[in-house]
Length: 225
Image: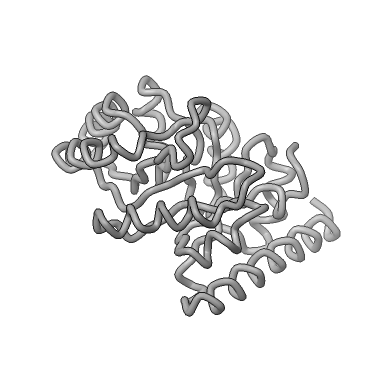
């Protein structure tokens, strides 16, 4: 890891944090109320370490197996890393996810709620959970339908799943603000305070509409590895 790599990572991170802070202040919010998740999927340790050195401590991964392979060694030396699973989760990977991640953003169906609750009881470990909502009603995307959310929340509560918020990925190539605003309204209606929404191309809009967690990859890493 060269000094230039560390400097480049620090510059990219500071640019994102500055933009986040500006958006939060414009919305009358405190910048510290928004968590920056550096999405490190497809990036190896050599790409991740400069961001860690620059002060980043919250990272997001899409796949359980990839995260297991990368983060065991990294976390051994940097114990205060927080890992968030931001990709789809198969029910048969629930135990591995509960063991590894501090938050799971993609809870989207009854079978996964059941698997996660069982895994959490077994491990006596309870990562924060977000229910992923298919906010644009897109058949190719994960997430529960808006109409099915109340039942999924009720099942999660009955299973003592620690659901703290909602997550969404809005449709591409359209204005995301209405979708973010809709998710924020749905969260308020259900008494949920956390919103995982916004990526490199739209995180400022997401913050303006209430995001508490933004998932940033390209703007921090400069492209996929």
